[in-house]
Image (cartoon, rainbow, N blue to C red):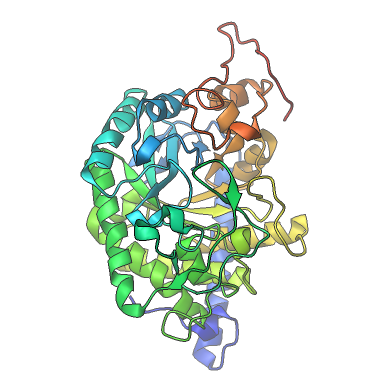
Length: 430
């Protein structure tokens, strides 16, 4: 597909037809927003939703979260138990980031899906989730420069869009549990990019072979795809750097390849234009988000089929308890960003990042999101959907066990509500 005009994306129309096109988009967005708000009236987190071919019984989604329990990269019984605990009939789960290649790793003991052994192991996890009646997508992940030689084949430098390392403000979790500094990456050559795209395509095929209902392309949070998208990282002078159009090219090549392999309705895309996790800064997050969305819309139009969904992280998101750098936006500014992207995207819109029960209910009731994904609250509350329905107290999560390798402690040992609907310790308030 041909890219949208970079002049239009940056709102610098130089010809009359671009002005007309921009006005048309505004009118169309206003109409779409109005109809969505009217349709959403009376909608709650517990209202059913049809996501393409998938019929969801509620709108509370398990967000993808790295947990470091896949010993030697294999999804074992602990992962099956973890995901099954969080499954509900008609529920929607997205797995933790799953490696698309041997160079994709940046954490200890994260699962892969690039070889036969890994793919076979995932089958048992997926089967267990399906037995509970849930839908599950596999998040495809490459960390890019957010890695270390210790995780790379042959001790090589991590790959990225750039040769600039992540700053010392951020630390990488090492295999022995200590924290180190990020090394200087190696900028990928143009001729190498098709191979990386192929890794995503093959990983998507492997996921379908393992029984997953679909996949999510992780294009957010400072990892490899985001390293091409963000102008604070991408310093390339070739066709993959500079303009927004160029910076979107790598993501769209991956999306195109994966869609052709497994079908559009089995593909979700995650982006975080306003999040600068791992130094992923962007001078114009609004228009970067619009650029990606307009390209996804055009792809859908050309295919005659919708993608599974677009998954966008709220600006209020923080990772590992660290506040993002830069001036925090006001609630109004954050709402403007999300609502602009929401009304522009022509498909299922998933929001994540810092949502409580009340904020999630508000988002779907106002038409700001079709689905809301929850991370840390789901870690410590495997029955989060039930707790939300009953407006019951929540278990506190224990941050120090987020990335340990214990298959039970801090992973599958968080308590459920009692049969009588009462609560069990430990508890916290929303």
